[in-house]
Structure formats: C-alpha cells, structure tokens
Length: 377
Image (cartoon, rainbow, N blue to C red; front, side):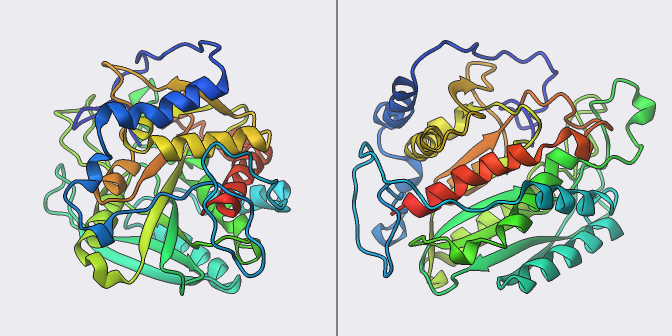
C-alpha cells in the first residue's frame, strides 16, 4: 500500500492529517453516509447495467436457520451477533509460521512456500481454493516478467450474493523507509504489512463455516501489491503498485454477468493489526463507499472495538486519501473500504517483525468482521 494520491503516490512521512476533533460517532458516521448525496449516486454505478449494480448490504438481526428475508433500516439497532471464539494465541502462531518463511516477494521461493502453506491450510478447513495466475512486468524491469498468483479462498460457493475480504500477502523487495540506504536490500519480514492479514484469515478458517451469514464469503490474497523497486527516492517513481488487485478487478469486470455471482461489498485489511492500532476513516473509502464505511464503524462501536476510531484520517494534499487495493475494486463495481492504520511506525522497515503485532488487535478486527457478516443483509 502507498500513501497519497499521485500515480507514484509515496510521499514523505510528513503528510498532513486531520487531528481528532472529538466529534461524536453518530455525527461522524452520518457524515460518511451522506457524502454520497453531495457526489450524486455512486459513480461506479453509472455505466453498469441494472443486473450488474451491487446491492450494498444493510444491517439487520443475525439470520436464523433457515435465513429469513430481511430489510432492517441502517439506523435500526441490531441484535447482538453470536460470539466467534477467535484464538489470539493461535493466530500469532500462524503469523510466526508465515514470517519464519522469510521474505515473500512476488515470484520467489519464499512466496511459493507461503502459497503452498496457505492453500493446504484453507483446504484442510473446508474451503475451495483457486489460484488466479498471471504474469506481470514491472516498469523498472522491462525484461523480467514475473509469475504472480492471487489466492481466492471460497466459502459457501453456491451463494450468488458474495462479500470479498481481502489483503495483499507479498512483501516489498526493498525496505525503503530505512534511513540508512545500506539497509534497503536487507531481508525483512513485513509482519504487519502483509503477513498479519493472511494469519487472521488462517484463524478465521476455523470459524467461517459456522458463522450465520446470508452471503458467500471469499478471502482474496493479492500478489504484487508491494512489487516495487523504483520509488520516488531512487528515480521517477515509474513502478506500478497493486498489480494483483488490478488484475483481479479487471478479470471480475470482464466476466460480467457470466460469473453467476456478484460481490456486493468488499473490505480490505492492511497494516491494521499492530499493538495500539488506530483504524480511522480513510478518505477514499468515505468518498467511494460511504455507506459501507458507516456500517463497519457502527458495528465496531456495537461490539466495543476501540481500535476503530470514527474520525477522518490519512488526509493530505486536499484529502485524497490512501492509494491501496480497494481502489481497483471500486472501479470494477465492488463497493470496498480500507481498514488501515497509517500511523504504523515500522512501515517498510526492518523492524516490522511479529513482536510488533498483537493477537488482541487481530481479535478485535475479526470481531468486527464476523459481527458485520452476521448482520449484513
């Protein structure tokens, strides 16, 4: 992921942010939900046929057995969701298992080992796993095409209404936030920036089949998000970010109604599992999917997830927000939000190691996610 809103969007650390204002949750989220009124209807719906328009879920009571048709208004106070026994100790073991592989750069043996480990794990827990394979050539390395793989982990494959839960799982080839440039090419683990979301999905694999939700659920792990060598510090910033999500979104849009299913919402998890993480409202998410932002942070309030802070964050250069994998999804017609902590001090540094990640933080994010899955209609 990268900061800022430029084609080469990696600014310096000193980007401007909105300071906490003390605004009440209801006011903040109401503002997020009504931003769409100022923008007109969601921009991504304009050129899409009626059958391809996503129907953003609303919140309601957790479904009974069998699921009942429901349409609770967004401001209805929903009944409590069933507790999911997320194991904070086990998820940290999964995180260490992934980091023990070493760097997982796209196209390397480390990435292939990680793919094999993850595929085996998800299949053992009952998921269907597909490899979306493609080749990408980075602009700074035009003669070196690299094989990349998005992993698509599917639960309830028979359900045409689906939600997309995603993250990148590759590691950056250069630690370009290190002050000493001699350290840029040293191996680093990217524990929070990549591995932690994959580890959270590994733990959720123990629970997804038992969560009462009306939607099919897909975990998607994007390759090639971090496959960047030429940064703004070393050249013209020519390299392309988000190779995996761009490919995934293009294939989804190209398939159209032939897919037989539709993603009605997406949540991206990036850098959100550190000790003391503060997950504020990301500007592009508020601009492109304000109703989904309001839903997620409202659910967070309801389950007592204090890391979800209902204040605008990540604003610079007039509020352009964070460039991340959720943008390609929105362009493809999937309302998607970014759950991210961009105050993480170890971003793209050798110090991004498992000890900086918290099992309690992962449990809190998972609590919001699983409650939202149960309440969504």
